[in-house]
Image (cartoon, rainbow, N blue to C red):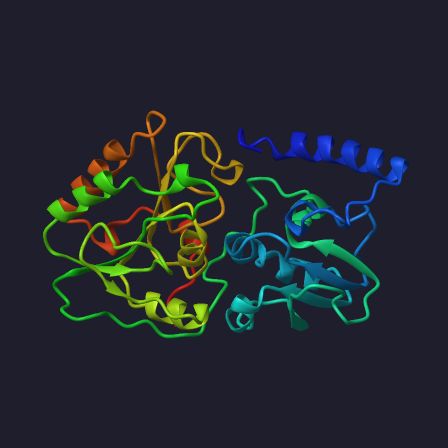
Length: 305
C-alpha cells in the first residue's frame, strides 16, 4: 500500500483472512485498534454495524466510505468516538450513529466490520478512492478572517507521544517566525507552546473547532487528525511528513489520492524537518494564495456553499 499497489495488498489480505478463519482465531481480547472484525461476509442488503476502533484521524479519513456502504447495505450503524459524533452527523450514508464505549454496542445488527476494513471490502485502489470533498460540514458557508490582506494559517505541530517522529522539531518550527504577513492560529489540543505566536481556535468540541477552521486560508499540519479534518473540509492543507511515513501517504509525490486540496511535504532525509519548513517558508513568503494552490482531481472539489 505504501507503493500504491492496493490490489496486491488485497490479495495478501484475502489469504490472511482465509487463514484466520481456518484457525478459528479470536482477537476480541486484543486492544481494539489491533482487532480484526470482518469475517469476509457480504454486507449487501444487511444491517451493518461499523466499528470505529482506530484513531480520530482514521475515522475522519474513512467515514467517506459510508456513502458507498449505504448504497450497498440495507441499514448502516456507526459506532464512533464520542468526540466525533456531532461532526459525523454531517457525513453522508449514516442511518444511526452511536457513541463508542467499553462493552457491547447495544444495538441489533446482521454483520459488523471495522471502519478501515471497508477498504478491503470494497477493494479500493488509488483510482477508485472516493475523492469528492468536502464530505463533512459541506453545507456550512465560509467566511474570511480580518484583516483581508493577511494570510490566515492554522498550525498543528505535534502528533502526540506515540510516534514522536511525526511531530515538528521545535527548532525547525521556529523558522516559521521568519514569514511576514501571516496570522497564525493554533489547531493543537493540549500541547506545549506553539513555535510561533498563535491564537488558538481549538475547542473541546471538535465540531466547533472544525467550523472555526472553515475561515482559514491554509492549514499547516503534521501527520495527525487535523490534517485529515482539513482535507475532509476541502481546505487547502499542507501536510508535513517524516521520511518513513504512514502507508496512506505512499512513498513519493506531493499529491494525495485521499484529499484533492492537500499537498504533501516530505522529509528528504530522516529527521530533516528544517528542509521541510524552509520550503514551506519560501512558498508562503513568495506570495502564496489559496486560489493559486494546485489541486489534485480539481473537479472533485465541490464549490463552497
